Amino acid sequence: DTGVSQDPRHKITKRGQNVTFRCDPISEHNRLYWYRQTLGQGPEFLTYFQNEAQLEKSRLLSDRFSAERPKGSFSTLEIQRTEQGDSAMYLCASSLGDSAISDTGELFFGEGSRLTVL
Amino acid sequence: RKEVEQDPGPFNVPEGATVAFNCTYSNSASQSFFWYRQDCRKEPKLLMSVYSSGNEDGRFTAQLNRASQYISLLIRDSKLSDSATYLCVVNNDRGSTLGRLYFGRGTQLTVWP
Image (cartoon, rainbow over all chains, first blue to last red; front, side, top):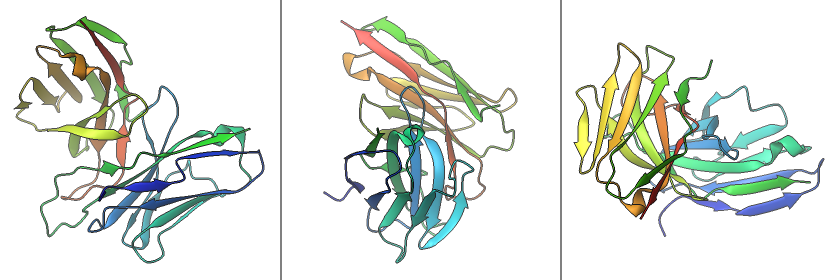
């Protein structure tokens, strides 16, 4: 399967614990995005990377959230001291992101990591 | 004010019906526009891009009105398999690559036999 993969698919944790999600994008894609989605809402932007550089962060990304993409390939999203309001589906997506190549403008999403904070 | 506003529905239509979804966006400088489809408990997937001149893909027609900051999606001859949530999506970045995409909350469609 050469799509975007995310791990774990489901995570249940107690309030105050730290959690980490991993995303492996499509291999030739330079851009990697993190979104969060709650029931009945569309995905909300958290952050995105161009290769290993983090280009933009949403105000939603409080200081308890940190994302990395150390080698420009996979990415991790860590949430420290989780709160019940962090319960959501965390979606990772990737795109070509290379202006030298025709980009259809399509984001390819993974199946998401569902977080439940008790 | 949200970047993208959509009527959440739900829309319940019989097979064969024509249904239209609308959304509005707040940033007049928005550059590119899309409709994504999301099936229940699945990830969003691109349905179609929306071009200024309007575009059609089979039973689906997308329209953009920049003056009114309004985007529409028309589905003709609805099929049971069209049941899903349709997300209106806007990109504000210039150039051919995507930066932050703004998603509407989605419009839920159910097509019944």
